[in-house]
Amino acid sequence: MDSEGIKPDNVEKHIALQPSDVSKAGDLDFGKIPEFMFRWIENNRDEIITVWNHEGKMLFISDAIERLLGIDKSELIGSSWYDRMYPEDVDYLAHHLNRNINQRQQFIINLLHKNGKYVTTECTVQKLIDDSSGITYYIALQKDITDKRQVEELMIRSEKMSISGQIAAGIAHEIRNPLTSIKGFLQLLQAGVRHKDKYYSIMLDEIEKMEKITSELLFLSKPVTDDRNIESIKNMIEDVVRLLQPQARMKNIDIVINCRKLDSILCDRTQIKQVLINIVKNAIEAMESPGEITIRVVSSESKVIVSIMDEGPGVSDDVLEKLGEPFFTTKKNGTGLGLLITKQILDRHHAKLTILKNAEKGSTFQLTFPK
Image 1: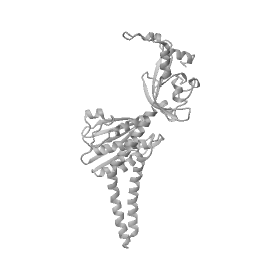
Image 2: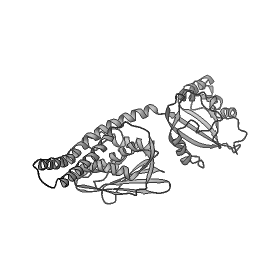
Image 3: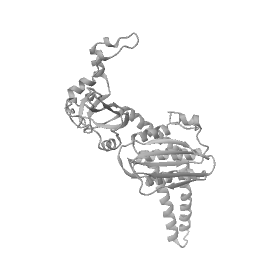
Image 4: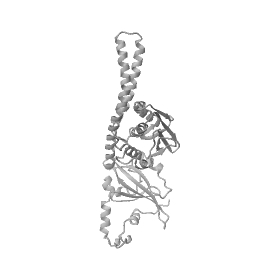
């Protein structure tokens, strides 16, 4: 391989900060900065720098690894780049890291701490080639974002509570109708009418409708997890539509699903349903008159695209630029956190959100998931 004969200590010398190599900038001569200051930077930098060869073997690890993972760097030199990585992240990175390009690539990955817990990091990887020797290296910069993720989870819980309150009116309306029917049938049965079996069957159907709605509402109170499995897109969409159908009916809006049963993605079911709820709920609220919301799923060998199309007034260019910013909202009682949280959840799943203006009217929110 092109990495044979490369020694870890040579690589470290090659990439280490050298004061003598730093050029002047204006009147300040950086070449005169003492070497101990560069050592101070290394000792206090939170980001981990790793260098690995074409075979994936670690050649250099910065001292920050001990502060982040509680492990001495000497224990990891010569190991593979994925040895302390979350298994699902290893599969994703191996599949999506393009080793044939020299551009920076960014990922969210989890590293195993010495205490057995995982640390969430933001990882930037780039391929570098030594012009003199032709040897290929991969250099990665990893930054701990665990605290940031904890704040995001608190925001998600807050947004869930907000959503629960807003859809409560639609659910109350949807539950009240079957309750009225059940009460009427019970009064008839109490009066001794015939055809009891028929009444029992109708009441059971009405109770089952209420049970489905309430079970979907309860999922909003579940704690944030990172339990990923292969999940059916169609099942998740049907669950979300069942939850939001009462709110849509109150505005005479039909929700149409165009999806194959086989379409599936690797995801945390609770988090992706949260994303779908945020977007479908926004579509319902955006439509000022009766109409239709279409949820279409298209898949290929490498990705799954979920498109949610409404018939509202559409999103103007100036609003489109600001959507997703914290506390920016076009709603009277909105928080502006819904789309922000949606994007953060999608980032965790290495997915992306694209907002498009429809040719005639309304908007399309397009979710792209990798397979």
